[in-house]
Image (cartoon, rainbow, N blue to C red; front, side, top):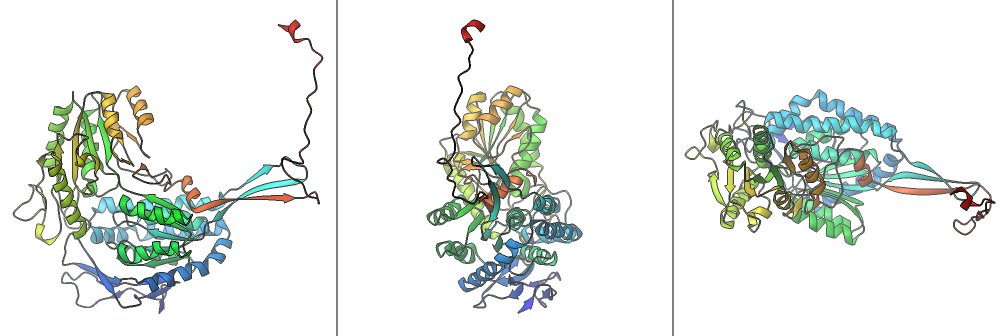
Length: 542
């Protein structure tokens, strides 16, 4: 085994016809580069150019997960005892290293999952912002002093780390989301076993190396690669074995419910950031052009592959025709392609072949629900492509933008998330009907309304059942100091980002320090204070 800081990247020879680097990837366990215990592996493929292989990575086994957990448990006592400001300094180092290598990391993210360079830059910047925000939280990991009801006694509260955290994130934000999870976990003194997304192992490998270069001790973050049904499931199973003190998961609601059940029966904390069918309402008072921009980006940015992507577009009947005319003009002009080779594209390929197949199933579900399809023709090929598709469609896995109208709340497509470039359009009779429709899906992640009526904006933000709401802005978007997460089928109430996430990675420890030298019992030994009757005739003052 080779220590992560002693090894340069190993490039595979003559394995990429495009002349691009192809990496021998590793797990990082206790600071050592390791392969899978049984030699299993899988490839990371560029979805924009399917013949472009980025690297080969371990298909981790149960034994590999156990080794990573062993390392995390062994590293926990020393890391938890490290002063929080020192932990913050290491986290700040991570942010500075990310800034130093930002351009290379952005290009890597775009090559590995197909996001545009601009969007990848946003994801990496979110990771940087998270580091810079939390580096100073090491000096503000406050407890409290509390006055006792008894004499000669002091009461204190402290934040304590939970222990070993299992981190499982999706591949659509492979830089931002794992840092959302691990940075506050590390700040609180926890150690981590991180299962990288199957479709972004090379970026995860690069980020883990940066963490170690920043001064993170061996075993504090352990990276394992593999499939969700393999390495991910092994990590969740370890909760039943008493080896994991926290699971933080971003992914589908179905898998999130399974993880919640496992954690619940073991009384283990879990953070679940799940799917969404995010509503965007447009009212007659809105700036229609602005609303069109927001809906267009919300529905088709990142090829619709965000948990916060626009799902149900809810249009007031009085502006429906005007809005749809302008909206469809933008949809029909959408530029699609590989942003590493073409400028000005709105979105690139699907994240992988798997996501493409799942998306086409979702498109068929919309059709079978009874919705009317007015735009979109499935997978883009050289014989079946929009006017503004750029490049060779056969090289990658690209999808048309899809629009379905005449959608009603009794249809399956109104309720089910379609993870990809597709929106469903509903018509509302009035504000109350629009708010009802916005709340009618089983999800509650993000939401938005476009209106210049301040009462409507107020009624919407107080009446919507969602974790996040945009007013005259899209359903997408997050900032490192704002809580991110949902309700209903979109999560279990925990939040990523901001100071609020500290609650998810620590517990409160109450300490009472008896200075009197004797046993004093709260509630029992407290002297009662007798009231004294005032010698005042209150009736004379009336």
